[in-house]
Length: 282
Image (cartoon, rainbow, N blue to C red):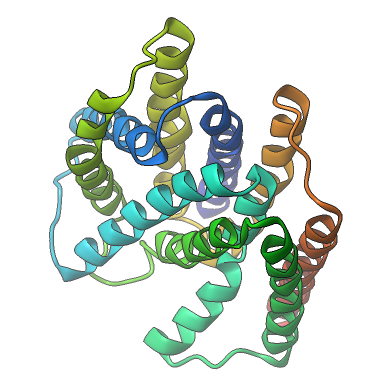
């Protein structure tokens, strides 16, 4: 029974990754300010999550742990939206995918579990890849977008850990985080001028599917698998996201960013493979 739950959880996190991966493409095609897009999509997502919470009769919780989770949720969606407008979708998602590195750091800070030798090596590899992004960002003027994308990765680590704390409640944190962004940022939509059907459909898709449905899958799945396993499965997102943008929007990563992306992914994969082998021998 436990194994069945874990298999379903893996499929849910995988489905969440596919939904998340569409974000870069739709962000690029909507001609609105990044904060306006984020406000609108989070307001729609809050409605979707709210309906889901009502259907499953889940009682919302609010405490300091849930509040920190809500801030992490608001932080990752806001930074992701801003970064997508300031740098390439590929840079944004790869730098956000440094989340497993920040998970290691947070586990040490909150649970006093020191990183293993494997963890330290992967940290060095990942940060070498990040350096490549910033070197190219300085030359192309996109360093600010890369920095915000990296900050998104830090917040994303917090989102992965929503179910790791005793008083945490992932779905409550996600709902309050989305509501926070929706209430404060959605009024910026009134400053926009393009309300054509393709734009409105894209915004609705971002809110209902790319954020709302994705986080329903994500928060349900991460109840039954640990944050590291979830981050491994989520590896589909940084691959699929820039591919969709390249095919439908024509945006490509720069040479140095491609090199940096390869280094970051190698660093994360190295850590995941080594940890998986270690856990099997214990």
